[in-house]
Length: 308
Image (cartoon, rainbow, N blue to C red; front, side, top):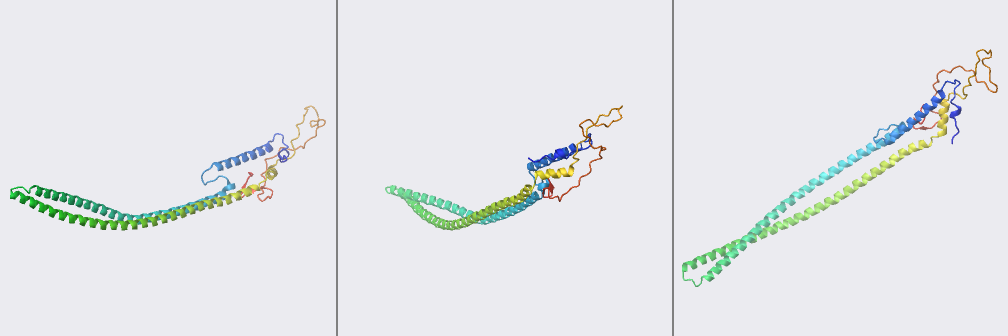
């Protein structure tokens, strides 16, 4: 607990004067305002700060945040360019694969249709042969001749459909080989893209975390400057500085004496009472001289914890 300085330095010889009390109240009000400003500073969420004591360091931190935001925007631009580049590369491969997929599906359908036609022609030939066998005992030669013609026609149809079926099979095999080749190329290209993407994304995240970590270190270094300046503050020295700058007097006003109208000794002193100085009413409080270079007064950068 510091020794009391207020009670011995804020008197006035004028009993009606409250200049000492007013000076203390004004100082306390200014101190309350100081606390209010700091409270608003703690609650404020923007980069604008109200307290001058933190202005420089807060501005420095804000500048670091701006630089970090610019770095993040640059990293975002690089990420966008990388993403667009991979999109174009992937699109080329996808167009080739879409074409071979479509060709494969179309040729497969043609082959299946040729197979169905071949199988149907074979069934028609079998039916024609069975009809010829059943007509062996027929007496009508014209009917037998028609059956033989039908059989011959069906055999020809089977041969033609068989050739077409085999041709489609051969074509489908070529399409299949082409599709497999393009599929292998696509897989290799996509795998290379994925490796590149993972590596790029990993490095981007690593860089981003490093930037945030560095921002924390830089901000803490700036806040440490504020903490160091606050460590230099002395409550006793601040109070002494205020008393020296604003004190109004060390002698309380003299007691008001009784003056008998009929007594010639109007200013008689009561027994046991000391007379105070016969001072006239003081004028206005002089403006105190400030001492910003006073080594006994603590400063936080350019901001004084004491209102002048």
